[in-house]
Length: 332
Image (cartoon, rainbow, N blue to C red; front, side, top):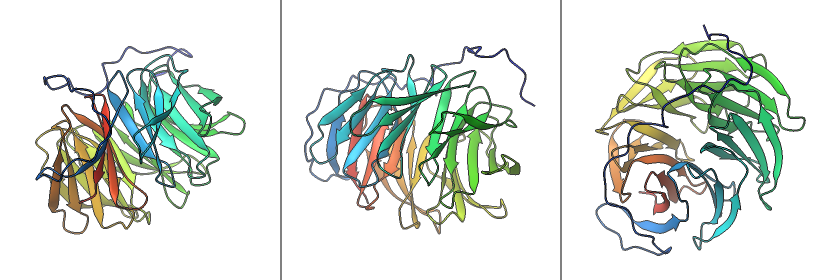
């Protein structure tokens, strides 16, 4: 049961995620094609953030990239050239989460300043600020209709918002730990959350009712994602594993082991038969979604990899790291 707190009380929480690995500083790199190596093909390096990169997303058309950072900004990038097109300022704390609206015209961010912001994707103008969480907003997601958004917070709740009015439609209590991940189902009827209480929860998107709790991880749940068809769920945890779940029954179908350190992010291939994961071990891994076999490992970042996303065309993947860069890779 979530303890009652005074309105707008900001809780002191530890720095996002585990301590960084001690590595030499990464030099600034210009966007460039890099020859294929056993560790994968890096198509572009996006350098410009002055703090750790926490989150990343593709535009629906796959030609632009969005990132959020410890430096309290978001950036919009041209994927083909690696050029930073926009820098979005306005948050008063690290920007922990970001998402691109399915409609393509708006962006969403969540911050340690306890707010979410909605932005114009073309101009970078802040259109709306959503206030109501009592602590850091660690996760955010758009509804398929691009009208409503979902947020997850260190205050142990989720909230559903109307982006036309800025109204909080309802609050979802129930987790006993920080909510670090959330996702809206492709069909729009269900919500998914992952928490430091080591569980995932499924919710009714219309009523806010908790439909099911998925226990099984032995560490904090840091990431979650719906399969493209909405029939399966993917989660990533500090227990070094990913799990695949049946969204209808809650059954754990597969446990994916291979990362020697915490799993921080995960993403589905648009076709639904492959999975991408990121880890504090500094790598990304590709997995077969049917067998759970790890098929390839990408190495190139100089610190923990904390974000990943598969491009809409399925040909490229994106990663963000505590080394302050993003990388665009050829999908393996």
